[in-house]
Length: 430
Image 1 (cartoon, rainbow, N blue to C red):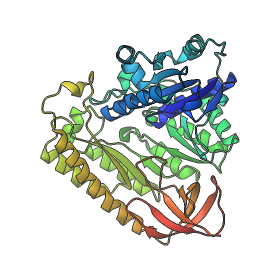
Image 2 (image 1 turned 180 degrees about the horizontal axis):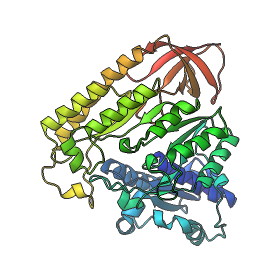
Image 3 (image 1 turned 90 degrees about the vertical axis):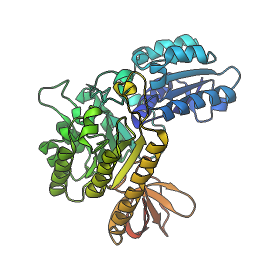
Image 4 (image 1 turned 180 degrees about the vertical axis):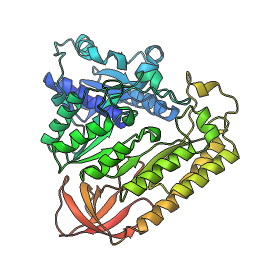
């Protein structure tokens, strides 16, 4: 059969999609990009916040409208887990809905739908990367045990659990062997790694083992909880030159009163202490965070505190979500819900502050030389990333001018000549 896959939501969801594609390809199904020719279309959905749910529903209807007449449609992922019965009742045209807790029997479920005899076994090396890009996400765990008041992830994916280190290292080695040049380590809570599996093997130990596999392959970490960033973990960043000094630390807010309502670990004082410690220990450290504005009970004073903290810390990259009221979460029934217009206004104000910060930081990078991984070309310019940028919608890019032809996946030294709000531009050094 010809199989199409649409993966929505976060990078963690994308890895699930690539594993499922691997299972299908192993059974000699053909993976296609065009859903119009597919015999079956799998839609891996996100159900995290309202906008993601709306995108998922819209995508399902678009697929149903544009698919071949006899093509099967399978919906899986977070939305399918959270609203399985509602989807069955409201969109009966969908042929199969698979929740995350059914992934261990996905072969059997697809066999029943496709009337095939697909093999049920899966090897980590079967994973099919969904793009030609020279980086890949390395997922080291799933679920979440933090139970933040606004978040539905523990409801959808259950408590946090680590993948065995042997599985992770085998997958990392496989990705390196097929030419991946940057591994991006992810989980819902990366810094919790190993605490549920081992007595004395945690994220810093896993990082060392990954870094040793090939010192020419770079490693980037995402989703670091500030209260679990140990001195030993910070030291690992300095110990290995192929671990990018990139710290993605989602803090969500700075108001201690609001952080307590959110059921977040840590407080503003701890955040400041951890960030300053990293800056003192790790040269050229890059900091990224995400924030939530409009959480119930957020007052003008709370928001002013957040603005002041953003100005003080000077994050390199910053993303802002407006609070999404999610049923079955603790915050859903809280009083003093903030008006959506106020939330949106607060988001815009924070982003305006951050835009200025980012621009000032980028101006200081003029005349610096950066090692850039080339990822795209539009006929005039090449586009890539240095250690400054993760490959998602929060960070920027390096725009590269070059008289010499470059290829996707090349590393090239670039002298920075121009700065923009989120991007930098330079010339390749031959």
